[in-house]
Image 1 (cartoon, helix red, strand yellow):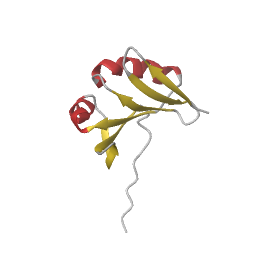
Image 2: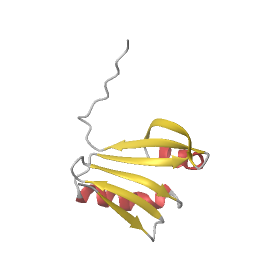
Image 3: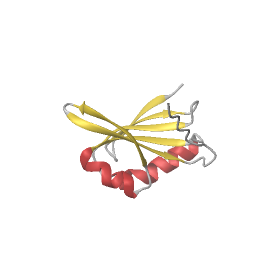
Length: 101
């Protein structure tokens, strides 16, 4: 079972999920670059394969610069502002499968 963590110093809310080996960043208001070392430490502690970030439009460039992959967008997610979903995978054995019909 996962657990929620509020990081006051980094001004972020995380959901750590050791069972599914992932960390989800639900909110953050500082730079992702500042939060990134903390995310890497927490990911290492729970042996995470993936970090998921819900980013606002003005945070997209920072996600891309840090090597995150865009997974999708949900319009009007943050009280009318779009949410961009990004993932960073640590396990290179995981493959993306694309099905076409």
